[in-house]
Length: 127
Image (cartoon, rainbow, N blue to C red; front, top):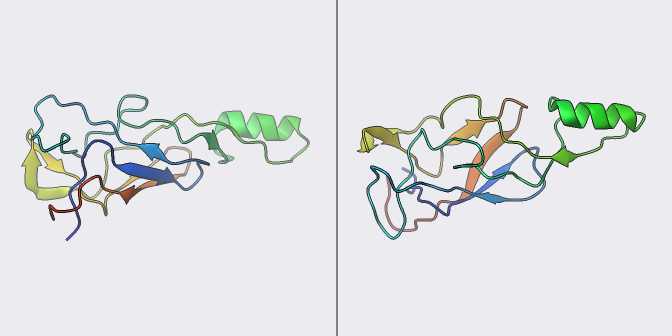
């Protein structure tokens, strides 16, 4: 069992250079000190803030900048592009009709990065 994830949870991306924070909008959410997150809280720049600079060669901006630098990896600003919802979610616990997130859920970026939680934002509620 993992810990529930709330707004303000800390995340990292395997190709990002800085951590980010999950923003959970309070619409139709169960409230604690912060709204609880669901598998659909994966919208770039709304729920998922950028991770600083991106180092993935699958990112077209990084590939172009690296080619212009004669092959030297040149990180470019991160633009999160989720390739689907958070997985696996906790289908036994519904928040606003959608499966809740726990700190073991992961989100894949279309540029190959793996986004995962480093701090769930909740230290007492296990899902």
